[in-house]
Image 1 (tube, rainbow, N blue to C red):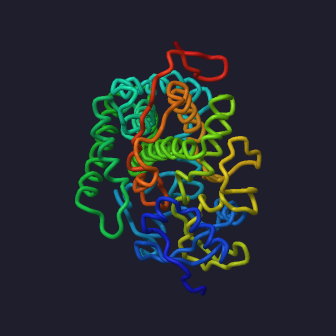
Image 2 (cartoon, rainbow, N blue to C red):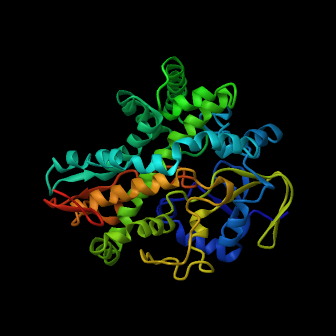
Length: 420
């Protein structure tokens, strides 16, 4: 068996905040290699684009975390909230994955996503509250904009009462802050709060169903999914439905401020925004690695054989900077035409919420940059810290202090549209 060549995760701040040079260095040595994770477990990390794309859709590389924990409890750390909340579509294989994805996909049909734009834009007007601080005041764009927007949208989609969202949001912020080793007491408390709340929410929808996604899933309970699958799916939808998009918005703003020529090109031609969002996903890696996978039999990737029953970590952030796939991969280019990246995954587990995330990001950037084209950092660039998340599956800023600058009295919302 190949020796462990590197430690993966739990990095020092310099690598945590800008991991791409480290990814490139390790990828150049060996694009598929055995590593030790910060939690002590061994794993195989897949760093090259072609191997990553193959691994994401190879049926011999299983997503069934519960089965892996039962077969070999030492293959992966259980995490929070625990195995009882792990039975969702990201952690199962067909046919269970097919069944669960079909149920959840009812909320993500194109017509329903398109109909959400007005509501998303209304939530994005949370900028009014930041504007109230004045054009020269420092405000936190993460706390005041990047997180409330997608969390509000997923709250609407799931039917979470508005009065409950601040409490639930606070719990998720604690739970999704990374740590190494045993979870701290505040994370356990937050996890317990989330578990209890989602159970109460499901019970409320059983008593009084409406047209939201929780009601749809509750109606399918017993016949099409178990209570464990229901609660697991709710947890996964809240996490996937807000944290990654919030990180995309924050990471994307920093990337554009780091590349003023690209920002000016985008301001001059807002029609480039959809393509720019895909490039920001590729370049900033809000999801640096795909979620848990384990081999069910030996698998060869890029000439390296991974034995059976080994954890596999697909590095989306590295694959999307692979020079064999993307010319000048470390250059942000909103006009890039190199084809699709792996930011939303690939194959049967391709992100179901990708169209919603793209819509939310488009509206967020339209509103923010259209109203505040002179946006600038309120702190030194080196003061920014990507310490939200574990650095593996989640990569986000703790805060983003900015000065918004004067607000345009009339600003572009998109091609052919203006807001007075």
